[in-house]
Image (cartoon, rainbow, N blue to C red):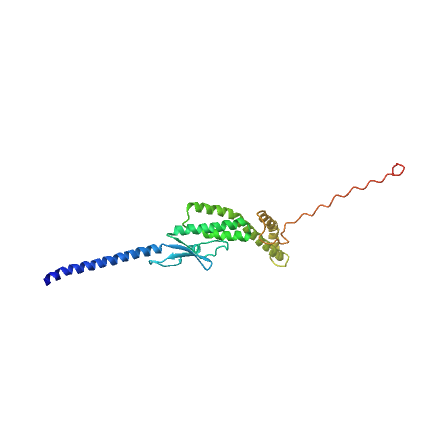
Length: 251
């Protein structure tokens, strides 16, 4: 009888061990799947007034600020300060990077569009920074790519105006230095004078071209301001006819 109990007890204990091992393996598999899913998880989180990108870690729960050795990705997902008028959710979660990129683009594009609409130089410059960030997002939809092109075209007008203003300013500074050299006893005075004759009309043309695109980003200087035509003098009044003599004759 004791031999029968011993004989049947061994398989029972072996089955229990196998069952325990199977349960542990199943738990481990579930934990691994949860960790892998969490590692693919992304989030946009507002912290201390900054919008930050978070990424899940390879563990069933938990996340951290996104870190990478890729400089382009680091720029695309760096924390940014939203406009003061922006209304954002405290946290938005995404199951993949495409969802993150497309949501982030929607925010950047809306901010850029609002800044461009103001037509103010400082706001247009900020709009360009939003678009530069959006251009680094790799997982945009085709519709968003087309929208980005349209925004780039719209902002290109203001970007061109800024570049013309900067170019005109640089040319003005170059002209001033050439004038100083040309008027001196420097060995380069002759060269400076010759170059000055060539660039003098160019400086004024570049300045006027910038003015055609809108108001200047800075105050006009007295030397490059478009000269105002002198007002025409009023027409001379005709001499008054002499009064007739009392007898009706000519004077």
